[in-house]
Image: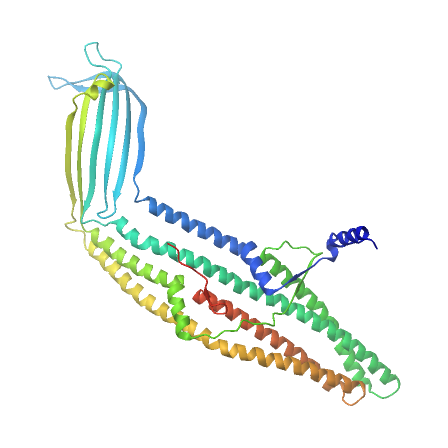
Length: 489
């Protein structure tokens, strides 16, 4: 066959989807889940959401330039005019008015106040004015410096500086934890499918084996070397094997669909998945003190604990600040009015304002005290709750680290048991064929072989799941000795 014909045949084979079989390892499934799964995309969206929330928080401390105004305002009505004799007269008026303000506002995070520089232009036109009146008239504020300062009030900007960076850092670490949680869930889905795949292999092997045994027993029954009872027992076992194969195929299809959906693969009935059992396990030594240290250093939970403490303190400060409300408002500027816009900027006058507003409840029937005491009680409850959550969190790590030595031992034992059980069945099958043992003992050896295989896969599943759970809890890869999250400035 020349190269051209060979290439054509190869392309033809690869282009036929009905014979396509996707072979995936555990790492392939995990990487696919991190890139394409709906869970990964949702985690990525939450990460972006928190990023823009943090950007919004940062912008609260930057100056803002605002342009506002009313262009134009029209009014036509009758208004009441008081006469010298005490009576009232009503006159009509028709007016145009416009205003435009340009303001540069800078929040003061240290005190919670706000300082602004403003420039204002106002225009008023009385359509019913007589010729002797200045019409239209313009009023301008060349510039105006204004300070608004709460006195002994709650400073939201100061507390945001303490909580929002913690919240953003928490979100970045939570994203890495979500990725590790996706790895753990992908591992579970992987082994669910692998269990179904192995169960189908076992069921098909048992069906073929029981079919052979039935033919042998039927031959023995025909020549009178076995009883009707044993033949019926073998036939019943054959029927059960046929039922097991049908159920195994259904379970395989269900788990295949669940795995495809989770990792984001488009499902197709013409394509099948074949998974390989990951016999090589990540091996490493875990020191409990290091695992706890990495968890405290890296986990989002510990950032969350600190943020919740700060927020409880913030709520107490807010409740106490609400007992009195005092605001100082002061401004200084240059102001003028004239018949033309250029004249308003000639020899402007000083404009000065100072205002101190005060609001103190004299009698509120204990409302203010209740609000403060509620905040203090919530602060105390938060402290107790966090203490308990930290203890539970540390206990989870201690339990998981303690399990690893047992899990590693279980994998070794079940692997050896799988090999021994398979060898025992081969021996039992050979002895059955030469009539040394009966069908009951052969079925016992078959059951033990199947159970040993399933126990080995279950032990491997438990080890890999615990491995990714440990990575999620500590954000540290003990196998490769590297941090899963690097804090950036």
